[in-house]
Length: 368
Image 1 (cartoon, rainbow, N blue to C red):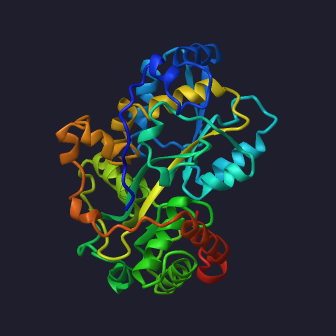
Image 2: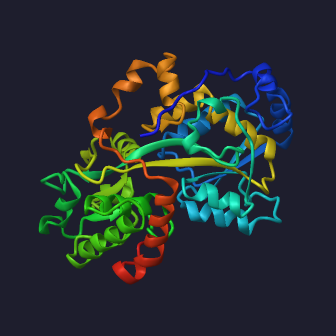
Image 3: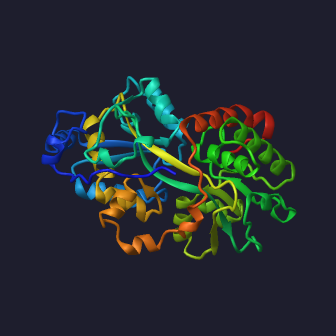
């Protein structure tokens, strides 16, 4: 597991001007003024029930009311975000995203393709080196572990592990929270299953994960529907494989109707990191920088934590006494995370290649 460490830095214009972490000659005051002049920030793939984003976006709007937040396709996957940048290279209109929030594997690939631009936030030193590009092209924002969200009105016996999902009692009940050919969450759900099946992280686990879902599909237990809180409540997908923070947020949203249970499987406990980046073609580059500063400020990091995501600066903020105890108390037991495996970038890339290229031929379920 990676460690979070570094000096605490205050989010002020003065600190921004003197810190060596900043890759811009602008002060925060100058960025703020320029962002207000731009008047808009365009985001993409940020559902309000994902990682507390609803409240995070509301917090940014309250802090900077002069900036309109234009939200594109909240249910898009990481691959869709990258394609949106490519499709709008020459478009400065409202369909061109300024910022992206994508799976770890998409950070380096988007840099290699020249799709993102560097910017180091003022709290840069508190982001672990293992989850950020040294030049500032992309940087980790939060992480969670893969879990099962279970509708207790329809599922009498809560599955405790991946192997349980193969049982006949779960016929027509198991879904992924995305299309495994494009969604980072779903791609890593397959990796988690592969790890539980004994695969070595990377290509091997990806292939074993595909074999697992092929078996689940053959048994009639897999449902080729993108699972969400709504489909779970309707009974279309009574068991959904998703990140713990999404599952816990859905539990809050459903408020007991239906009653749900969130389970971290006993094996194949996989931790996943997401990353932020600014589009190289951002129509509102200063608003994008200001957004990043907000996300990595104490306020933004606590906003993600309220949405059950472990933010990048979590350990440093806990050490500095910046995380309220009531927030810590709402998180799952620490024991659920003790066996969590944080795959390397190479392992994530190998798994992604195996899953996206092999899903149709091995599993053959058109998830939509």
